[in-house]
Length: 113
Image (cartoon, rainbow, N blue to C red):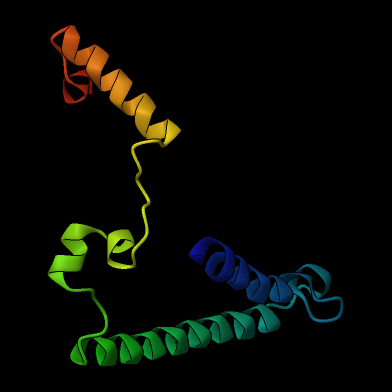
């Protein structure tokens, strides 16, 4: 999410300081708008970080930021009655087949890394 909303949003704010058709650095040669846009980007980042800190702290203090250890160990899919990793999954079957072949040859996937 940061690569889209954070980095691209930051570039969008700063790009105005470069390419504005009247006061942009590229057109006018004056850095004033670029400086203003950079300060604005910094302020927006601080507001976002502050709000996130407050919300996450409140969630942590009320015990809603993390799932229980039991649900974490069991898996959230199982906690919600779902099956994310079924025995019939093609990817899982390929992994099992590869692991079986490696084991027959006396190797493990970790050894190959």
